[in-house]
Image 1 (cartoon, rainbow over the protein chains, first blue to last red):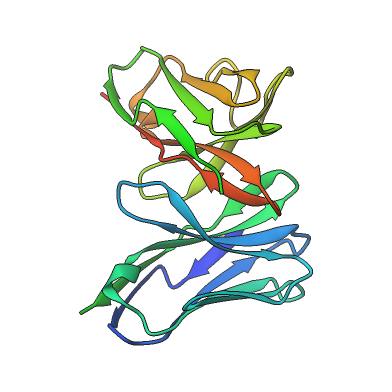
Image 2 (cartoon, each protein chain N blue to C red; image 1 turned 90 degrees about the horizontal axis):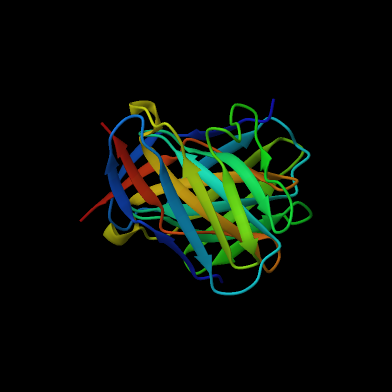
Length: 110
Length: 113
């Protein structure tokens, strides 16, 4: 069964701290892996997409890594800001289907 | 990126009734996807809608409960039929663009009483 797990479920950090969100997937035959941000009452915003042949992707203060063989991905957020507070979701693509993790609720305190 | 709009944005419905959700995309796409996010949970794929053919449903979802239409390459509807409180969820429309990046609409928040 294809499952995606995210750890931790919730995280609270002071502003300016660097942090890492973890994502693991049971079936390594992914096509790609995508990280999203979800704000309360809103839809999903795509943050980063990593193809299965890639090791990492960077966008601004965000860096996502992928290790297919171990079934893991991490999202690194540098110099966190209160505006980063949201739920972060990772999703593994298998064919046409995205399998989502339950998310990490991030709170950055000012 | 992709611009996706959904109608309605939210609704409160009585059990036993049906609600049709509309999804409009800013340009043509081959496949459109419908996801559900139940309260406190993550997203689950309901079905994939191709233009000109029957939608493909995931395990646990059936056409009688969630009929889908795909009349053209920019539009789709999802109907939630004979609703019960367990159908209270956010329903999201989604498309794939570029290098397989998936984009989501703003969602339809449904509360069934």
